[in-house]
Length: 272
Image 1 (cartoon, one colour):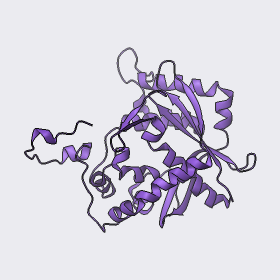
Image 2 (image 1 turned 60 degrees about the horizontal axis):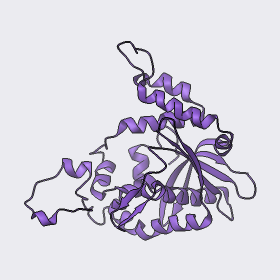
Image 3 (image 1 turned 120 degrees about the horizontal axis):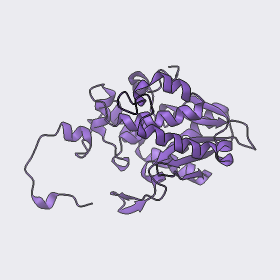
Image 4 (image 1 turned 120 degrees about the vertical axis):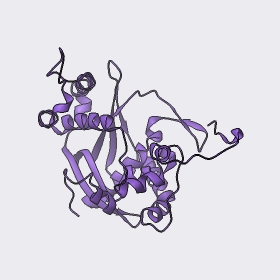
């Protein structure tokens, strides 16, 4: 199946390929739920949160050099009434501040240089995978490099890990370490490299004014990210293929929407 901008996020593509977001969607450690993931793959359920998804596309359209086209194709980002009619809605005005913070930083722009929105496929752990690299520099120094662009609420946020009972940073919480590891392996396969290209992550925050940071990942981090996939992929594979029934997490939007009430003792309520 040949990937393009038109079908990368399609149901057909998601059913055929595994992706990092799909993989994490099966794991409770990343806020995932097997039952919700299977409902999405069947087309029975669509996850809410479209506004944040569209805002992410706005930032990535800028990185791709296609922001003018994005604005023309999405009139809903403009106010349609009142004194602000015809102007960008407030949240998109703030996105412009975030973009300005990035494009006025020479090092950020150097890291984000290269080929944009590069689609690649590969095979990991017996499954076909798809990736989309935000910025790809296949020939730089000895091994090449690539970068992923992320917008976060803050660089200082910490998150409670229910399974390990520890606080973790945004990289671990959102599984970005897993993402760059899978991307590095698929990129290596496509470029016929002996070693991995060096992954970078450019982070811009939604604060006013925005903060920004460039994070890089070494080979130990890539190995660690791939090990997380290796430890969990058999279960994900079995559920996605229908070999075993999916489990409900009991907490996500899908589980709440489809929940049937039961009677429980108050001591059963989780506090972590």
